[in-house]
Length: 81
Image (cartoon, rainbow, N blue to C red):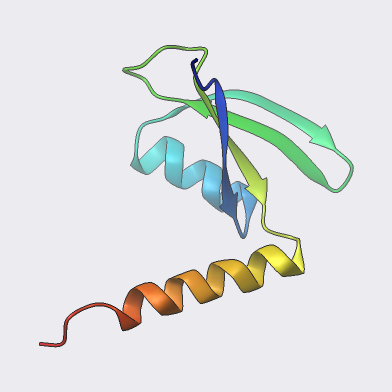
């Protein structure tokens, strides 16, 4: 079994695309308008072209709550200095 696509939730698709391409060096593969959002996928410059990350808009309220709680939990579990 091989995973070909997985999603990364982003608050802003344009900022996410700039970050992953300009800062981390990923390559844009698809950028297709879909209603008010876009289907954007990126690939690693060093990996196979058929393994894609989709930059999904974090517009779902349940997804936003889940993400906030994950961050909060992660930061609370960090050791204090």
